[in-house]
Length: 114
Image 1 (cartoon, helix red, strand yellow):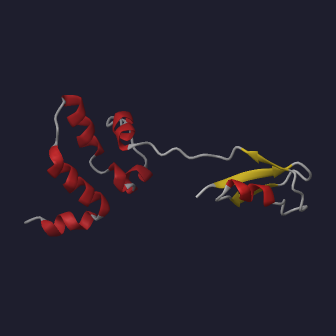
Image 2 (cartoon, rainbow, N blue to C red):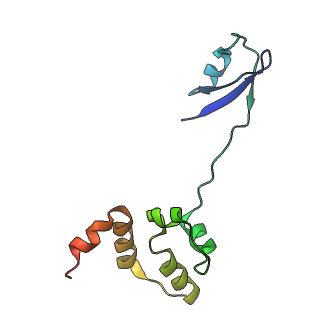
Image 3 (cartoon, rainbow, N blue to C red):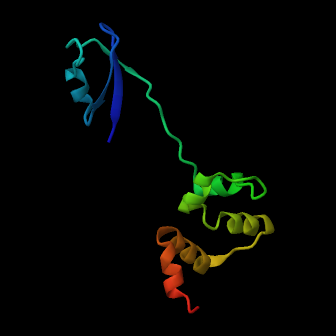
């Protein structure tokens, strides 16, 4: 849902509003001074890299932080990177197993016949 950020031209206070329809934008008021003299400002954005970007930018030789190892999306990243560099398709079975490992790491041990 679109949450827009506005700055009051009267008191300079910044506020966020959930705007579902363009018509709703006309009725918003500054919560600080009740002015309707608001201008939309550019809010901070977050960029989430795609898995392809993550694989491409992954450097297996660099030292990883603790947060790298606690992020389950990084499981198998090294294998995927090496396979791409060698031009090898690991196949759907590998991708399925990897996705299962990322979503429920304990399931791999339960499913294996060790």
